[in-house]
Each structure stands twice: as structure tokens, then as C-alpha cells.
Image (cartoon, rainbow, N blue to C red):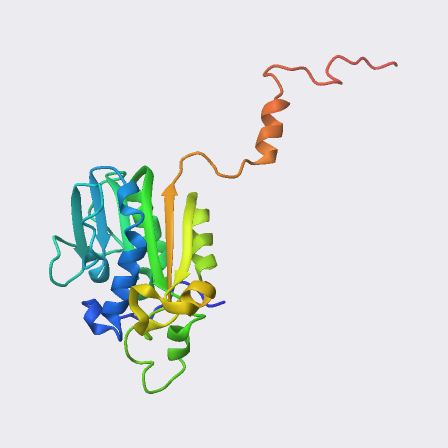
Length: 240
């Protein structure tokens, strides 16, 4: 497995229009997200990256939506995704639409997002599936230098592991859109073989209580030694 952090600079597209079948990918992702926007509540939603900024979030219950990126159009906050200019625990939700796919250090982005999210805040992550037609495109010389084939593709389970390490509870994860040009409908293959979908989506919440209890910690609490306890041999006298 390749390391998540690399030295090579990954060029991010300024718009979905720069991707082959970009609008089809965007519409399919928006259709998946439409089921979740009504469930999100709070004051501030961060849409990090140019692709996130173009996602339609009009159905979201959160009132204030902030588009942040290093450059591009329709951006309210110009910021480095590795060093966000927001206070700790100041945002209620964050959308990373293929943001990790165009980053040299996806772990650091997740840590920054975790820093600015409130407790029980929402994190929505999407990316391209390496085990799909998009992944196959990375092997074809004529097209592998174009978007989205230049992006970094992480498996769904690998991204779920990253979120688990940050103590996020994954509420929903899916792969969808097996055929890039099929759009939101997906067709027969998307319905019956979803594992090979070109896109993946993960919806998670930031938790403050550990999701997995440590048995050793529970044991120590149950059999805690009182302060000032005398050892078994403390008052023994020499028989001689």
C-alpha cells in the first residue's frame, strides 16, 4: 500500500468541467447527498475545495455556507486546506468533495477539519474508486494525464480507517455510478454491482466518547488500588 503523504504536488481542477464526464459525476454525487442535507443542522457548513464549492447544498438545513479554497471562482475564503483560518470547534459540518484525491497529505487535511469541527459535527467525504472504470483509466496512456485519472484514488475502507483513527462514527458509506457517462441514474450495473462504482461517499460524525472501550482501562477502574494502601510485606517481621 502506498503512503498517503507524498512529495509530488497534485494539481487540483478549478471546476467539474475540467474532468472527463465532470458534470455527470457532480450530478450523481448531488443526488446521493440530497438524502443527507435535510439531516444536518447547525450554523456553519464548510465546503473545502473548488469541487466542493460547486456542489448544490441548497437543501441543507445549515444556514451559512462557506466556500474555501486556495484559488478559484465563487470562493469566499482563500485558504490553505492544510492550515485552515478557522477557530477550533467553530464549524458544524464540512464537505470534502474529492478534496483528499487532490492533496499531497490527506491525513493532515482530515486533522485540520477535525480541529475546526464542533463535537458531533458532520464530515462528508467523496472520492474516486480505484476499483472502477476511473481506476482503469489511470492505466491508459492516452487519458491518464487528464482529470480525474490524475487524482489520487483511495479505497473506501482505507478512508474509513482514517476516520476511525480520529474517532469518527461512519453513518453511511457507498460506491455508486459504475458507468461515468450514465449520470445520476447509474443504470443496471450501479444497482446490482455497486462495489465497482466510480465514486465513493462517506458520511461520518465526530464523536467525543471513544467508540471502542479499552478493556484494560475498565479493568483498572474496577480494581483500583486505594491511595495509602499498605503492601502485603510492609509489616512483616523477621523471624530471626
